[in-house]
Image (cartoon, rainbow, N blue to C red; front, side, top):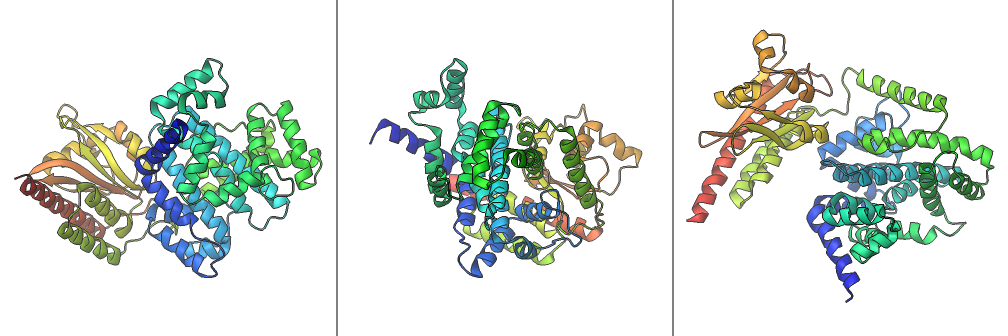
Length: 499
């Protein structure tokens, strides 16, 4: 086996098994569902979506929000979305949600956001070309274009020092592909091929790779979409864009004058689509077309759709309290403790119970630092997860007492229905309001093991603005107590095993 192959295998193992194992599992599960399986494919995809409450809510938001034309009647179930939008479109949504959420965690380097921005732009352009050709499965083209450089995106996300080396070579004047070969022993396109095969999306991308040069192939839309996105990055008046525009005209049988207005509209759609999927920073890398009127019109339409969605008195995409889910999760915690589990799994189950069972918009567990001066988010569920995980870090030292310090010191849960009282306002400074929002009610409960606080659970309905009630507060406290008991049980089990 050559050094090149060993290096490629090593990177494949690192990305698929160490850095992104959960993503690989989700993508593989979705990709394995074939649209040719008659009625079974719809129920299987619905089952996968329902297993992930965050994906369920995201799918419904996207189908009711700026990504699609607003409807007079909202889609409030995944099954309804599958019926109205079709299997291919919902599957495309799910793959995109999973990939964007994973690759934009933390603080992605510029290469990740640039690559993802081009991917969104290429995907929207490719889908548009497919529509104009009368392709009945244009969403498949969208997905293939989005994943066309998945290896590159994954490498820039998790490449570490090797990624820095490639960047330094390119900045010194070495051509990009040559720099990749010098540092890695292979080109990142090879990583895309191997990663796609590992995740079960190999056939989809292989068809795109094979059909890229075939003028009559529907998959040529993928290559043309990426060529358009790359050319636009050189400038809307560049020679490259004019050249690829002429290529695309023969593909869709339109003149350049007929095609280019659609290309410009697609760029604006791509910016808004990226934002809709939670990839705002990627969308901002897409150069908007020179027509200010087009940009303003698209932004106005997007904002109008978002405002209409936010104005709904009871958005159907938000989770409602479900006692059956609460009971199921409490039983699952008990079963896990009996069979053996770890702290992280228990915390995830508790958060699932709070988020899905009680019907919250957001649920978070934050851990105390070893010196007990700081409280930092460890894991979260629901809306604004990326933002919370990055911003939820507070000083809770006695010199700067706040509401989190109060809950930890008192070892008591707290329900804040409003913030009008002077005592509450004093405990919630602007630095906290900026992160959690300034108006919505919320619950907090300490996590205490053997009399020692180790963190807190936080939950609210900031996104929907819905009220909280006493029954929900009692359920929240019950899950917090279960966390204390479970963590104490695990702590004692660990002590016994160490004897």
